[in-house]
Length: 250
Image 1 (cartoon, helix red, strand yellow):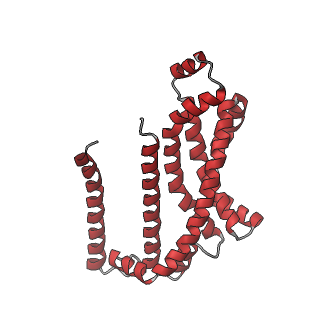
Image 2 (cartoon, helix red, strand yellow):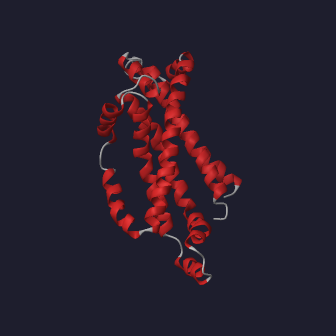
Image 3 (cartoon, one colour):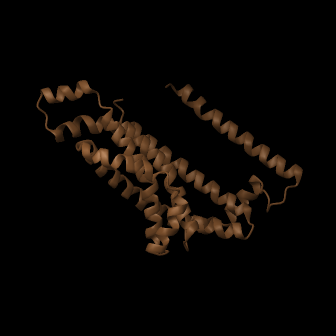
């Protein structure tokens, strides 16, 4: 993709977003919509400036929970994906259970984790693991399955061990799928942390949102939503950049 195409790819969504924000501001101003119903973009920006220090402190807690949960998700997903790829009986036994587990609403599990493990950081980390583990693991398993059979036969011809085949063929081939799963999980992890904080917490951006909502300070709620979206976009961009570097040979 040349530079002009990349510029066009970024220009159109940015232009559409700016138009939407301008329309939002115009509608709220002209219709004189009360702030407790719908704050304007300018009200939201002012709330972000006024509560910036408080929001940053709460966001720091949420990011810490998210980082722990995400790291555990990657480690567990890698371990289980390797087991399912290496042993057919493990895949046949666990893969259907993984699929079924995703039909359980996260918001229904969170209160149980809080009852079992208290109001500390552990229930939030566990919620993040439950949400993020699945897309990473399934992406890796699918990546291992999609390795070109001709390459596998070539490695067998050269009498490569299972470890050599995995390190030099299966893992590099599955990296594209792996980073796709990581980007999906990155969008989920902040959401999962916030759900955990909504259900029971004393700190974090989710707690801040609940408190401001209960006070009908919707400008502050919108400010926190803006920060959450910004963080998610930055995380996805970082993972996308790392993924393109890791799979440059593609």
